[in-house]
Length: 535
Image (cartoon, rainbow, N blue to C red):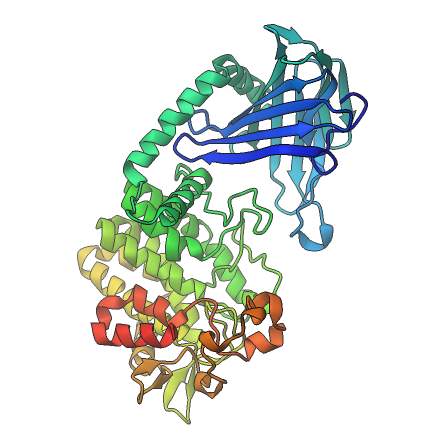
């Protein structure tokens, strides 16, 4: 602008506000700027990812001169050469397939390096000043980057508005040969609707979501905002239409997790969807795991498990394990239990036993076989133990007999046995087919029952509480209240070695198990364990 780059880090910012309108599903930003030559600008933007027109997004960008005059060169484009701060060794995940740029549109088609997904993004935009369109002055076209450039002048009090419409299509939903044509047609539809009408559609779409899913909290504004933010992010990330998709922590574009699937879906997210929308949404999340069953069996086989034992990945996009830390990949096996419990929880909540017959029993069999092979008999204890695991509490690695993992494993073996018995009488043909195709033998179920009856659980009988794992009470048990403020948060102040040897808990394993299986414990037991964890 006026020969200088408008960089917020180098100009005077007189006002800055970024506001997420969760009710209407629109992100607003307002910036006041004073340039080195004294020119003052006000820039406002509104952006949305449409819930009404799937696969599309829109942006309105308004520039107003508050004082002085501005000769502007505005460049708006698509950049496919982005690397996340949290990516592996600055690796970039895209290969360019095609790109196109002219006065009418810009487009990029990229392919993911590992999974081979094609993504085609096409954009059209219009810059308007004083009721007239400003023509594109230059097209930028280089590897993985396309843009349109506008050059224009605004006097004091004048403003210009850029409307930008984008569609994003993937080869998961469109034949590669047809992606360009399909994107062109959809983009025309979105652009014809116009930004103002897209705002109306967006508000109406989110009104329907909030009608069913809003949770109201009285007397705590911060808690109210927090719960609504979480609800917004869940529905922004997953709408349940496609059983090939799942819920990415921090969304699909957050730099920390890259949209991959974790066990958090089954442990924490499925109950929310069950309670706030039609049951098909949660069902699709469980069908997603059935679609990846063979990959889970392959993952287990790589670790030496056999006969159809299944270990679902800690982190995945396509069913393969893609986590890069061995102590989590190989030890944090409790994720299998969360998936099994989600099946039970879904059937309990909805009464949809057809899911068990069509999909769920096969998943449960694979998981149960994994648990039966993962435990071993301890001659010293005369019980089954599970060695070398990491529970949900990642402040402890490679521990023996994590209470939660042992408990959820035994529960899973018991539940799978009950499902087999249930359908042996109600639908014998279907259950017999599944058992035959999975080479299931009666001796397996007998072994499971022996494990259930003889599983070891670490416990402090004197205090009447379950221990997170063997040796937990051997740690230096310093209450959090005695930790100097200068040493918190621990993950920023302490070495990882010190954290792993400490008594401090990142995620409360025992409480997780009591939460899942609370009907099996009396109130006093739950209270004692809760109080001991929160001292």
